[in-house]
View 1: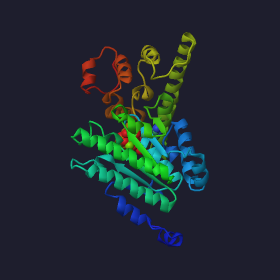
View 2: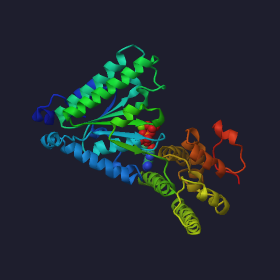
View 3: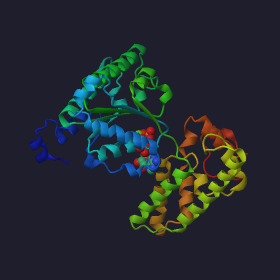
View 4: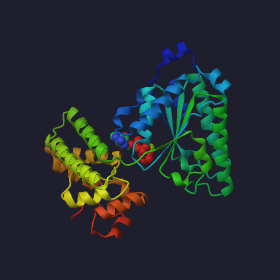
Length: 369
Ligand SMILES: Nc1ncnc2c1ncn2[C@@H]1O[C@H](COP(=O)(O)OP(=O)(O)OP(=O)(O)O)[C@@H](O)[C@H]1O
Ligand SMILES: [Mg+2]
């Protein structure tokens, strides 16, 4: 959507249409009005939300503070690295903040920058950052989001020559340094599922490193409730016993967790050790939605809800069993990513079942214990 009248009044060069046209070869451009999700749609992650809110507030005040920042010689580097497994809200949360602060954002697909042709990768990296910097200067603020940033300068990239990888990394670092030095109101985000593969020099360039992870049972409860409420708000028939059963299961897990903490004399978390999982297997054998969705991302739960929706469309009522079976069908991401800590938990959770099947990613669904 174009704001051409406003744009003429403001006398800007980079109109909404021009931004879209010029940046489209690098990735997807979202104007605030194009963005559907809000910050509140991404449940949990409260500390990260606070950090990002401060970050965006600073971005909005960047130009106002130009002189002071220069004099302080401590100009804040407007860079944030988001890392963690797929589907945990990295892109959505950033887009939600861009909408909240009314700033256009370009999600660069890093694979599009990387070219097997010598020199092209460097040209693309410089091209997109310099263009974004010009837009930021013209519009007052802009967000450039490098998705899968590890594609720049890692073994995963399709640059085959080692020297070329190094040059790509160096040119990325140089161009970021230049933007920072000039104090332009350009926020640069990087996102990766493979933080261990990221060049350490790139890692260091980012001021904030925000780790996203699979949601714990407290957050999973809220995510499930929020998706079910979305269906209800859209006037799709939902059996309200889903909510009461979820409450019951939550109480059971909390009681077990509290007893365990008293016995152990310290706080426990669902992911850091096996205490809670083992105890749940003993005392909450049948399990419910919260036990099932251990190791699920928010995106897995969303996908499960979509699957359930198909069924609900034919039966005209979404029941607890349909919802459970749909989530079981989609499975959780944790068993597909290299997370030994979670895998070992899931494995012990599965009791006697064959671990080899997990390595082959063949097993899904709740355990038969
Ligand atoms: N904490 C959460 N609360 C609610 N929904 C969530 C949450 N995390 C993820 N989702 C859902 O999953 C969808 C996908 O999330 P998103 O694309 O932001 O993940 P990502 O971390 O960027 O994944 P990737 O690493 O694959 O790019 C979101 O649109 C949202 O609906
Ligand atoms: Mg993403």
